[in-house]
Image 1 (cartoon, rainbow, N blue to C red):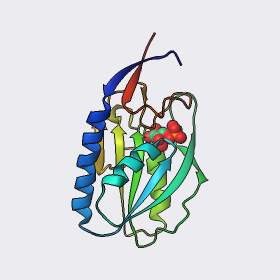
Image 2 (cartoon, helix red, strand yellow; image 1 turned 90 degrees about the horizontal axis):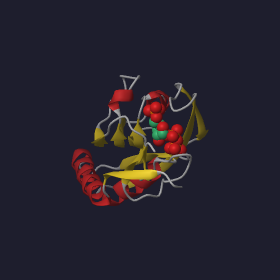
Image 3 (cartoon, protein in one colour; image 1 turned 180 degrees about the vertical axis):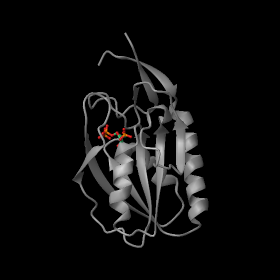
Length: 175
Ligand code: PRP
């Protein structure tokens, strides 16, 4: 726990941007029901903050996936470790993630979820690291912040499972 963490985005900056994105989502869906799908574990902090600020009839479900790969790069082989509780057929679905990196997780998930016939399916992410993208077909409708290719923690993002609970977004500095 003695890593040096530099604040990249303060708690206040994140809160202000989450509020903005929630207002944009509320306008876009214009009073219609919206079904949020939170991707565990990292997406849970952002999903809660976002959901509280969306002014729509909202329902919520959770999914957990693991991606196999060596080191920090995911392989593109994704396994569902906890599936949704509810069907999504006919629903307007918004997938909520903490970060999109290679895009492998989302590329897979979107294909799987499209086969369940939702009315629509879009993506919302707290952070996007476009420099790392290998799957160009992942189109993100709502992005709070674009970040550089650094080791980011906090607000759901972990380093070896710790730091998820930091209220800000930070970068682990090389010692
Ligand atoms: C992170 C993140 C995304 C995925 C993004 O999850 O929450 O699901 O990696 O990476 P990609 O774009 O390269 O596929 P992680 O597997 O670290 O699990 P966690 O949310 O439980 O920490």
